[in-house]
Image (tube, rainbow, N blue to C red; front, side, top):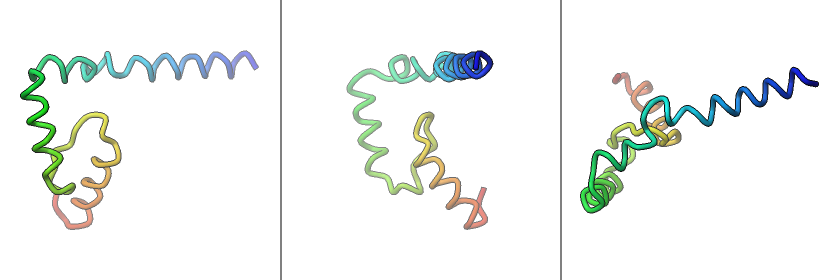
Length: 75
């Protein structure tokens, strides 16, 4: 019981620290101003799903693009 509790606590701590470790927590605010970020997001939304760039935190879109690239023979 205690071992399971410690395992859950450890996993929660690791998962909660991931954004701070890879720098994605502040990446959005530090690279673009508000207007520039809005324009960039709008341009990405207008792109077809398979042509959009891979972005941190966009797991479903990234997975779809990766699967499409693998099935078409592109890397």
